[in-house]
Image (cartoon, rainbow, N blue to C red):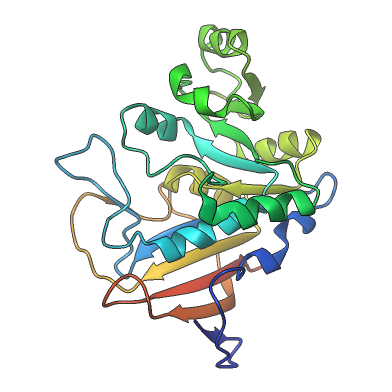
Length: 273
């Protein structure tokens, strides 16, 4: 890869690019460091609808193992992964992209060893944002060795809360109505001792965190592919952000090796004050 910004032109290996950011050390007691990651096409598609699936899925034209390696490196630095109930519904019907990281494959063994060397648990805990609490318990079974939290609003269905609690799932309230408030959620998670929080859900969860101004960093892979399509997701979904959220470029690398015949950019942004 070539470092484009800051502009040195330095050639760098892919492996270890994001591990050197040491995100697990950036949070403080009571103030976790919250970061997120997406891969998008040049025309802004992070997921597409198709006739063969019931949910939007990551396009095959953008997904690639080099980006996936960096996704795993980001997960390797987290105390906690924030996802959504939708992921577990997709998982139950075989439409989830993969199991939640850090992956158990041999190619990611160095990341797992790195976590342990840094004093982190073998795997990050999991927080599930859900207003409906439509979370299939069967889809949680592969993760029972981790701590699982469900975060919902104050007015969410108490019978579903009770069912989750009866199955050993912890439930936190962090929002009026059924909707989760990003600021309250972060405060609750800080009280649980979390310092590095990696949001890996879709556009609604990212909007929740962005609107609450709790996102500290965005990792964005831009696959140099134009996809088109009329049924798609982009980075955020929600009312207009007023004012718009400015983002400052922290670093930019060019990777010519994937996707095939295209290449991609690895960009890192932080919100402007």
